[in-house]
Image 1 (cartoon, rainbow, N blue to C red):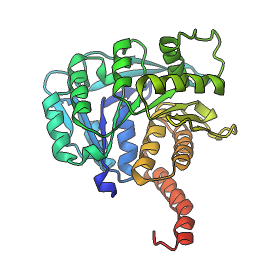
Image 2 (cartoon, one colour; image 1 turned 90 degrees about the horizontal axis):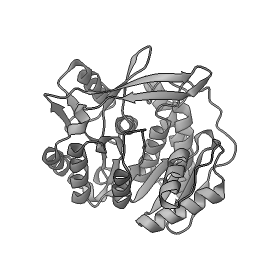
Image 3 (cartoon, helix red, strand yellow; image 1 turned 180 degrees about the horizontal axis):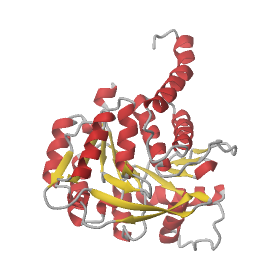
Length: 334
């Protein structure tokens, strides 16, 4: 299948992260879309912004990352999304506090408009990939739009759970898992799911999960929700992958060395490159390894995406170089 016939559709929030020193365009789905946009995936981003100056920052970023604005709705009443970001601990750059403001434009994504756009802009959506999370489900309007889209397409449904405190319900989690084919969670989110579905008490300390715990929880969730696979990201320790066939892939214990600026968007970067691998037909292990290394590198820049195009170019060159011997050995042309 050609890349053009395997579209990627991304649904959810586009917003501004207000850091103490500067506003940064963000939103987990938009972070994923922008990384994919740079690598010429041309994902369809379905979201909603206000009729305000902040929306222009988002539109400018869409243009910079070669994203179509076809799926971006404009709301005349509610403002473009904003999140106030503060660093909890100056000694730990991974600790952030997010104040997610209520009643934002992305809470009011119109269902029929979204369906029409998906059908017209991605007519081959059934053969593609559909990414979604939970934040844009906090309001019944956008939640209804998402569920209508999910029911409309036979695309592989990739759920990045992305739980934000006080922004989700157990019903949202349950419904999302029912729709999902591939689930991506971080370590803390897996522990939350273990509490809900395995009646496991969360550990008092912040001790890392053992492989046996990860596998046990993932195995139960795969069976319960008929999932194809679960990816658990483990920060600098990498990832753990388990699929319905019982294949378990774990990254090497050696941490990727990076000078952390902030960890905002690390998980989104992982998702973006894993989806890139799905679209380009990379081997599974290659997709996981590249996603992990790219996510680590994103933690070395401010915000969820790099402002310098050279950052992305070096990764494309590296992947091209890694792929070249495969073409040469097979006698095929790249």
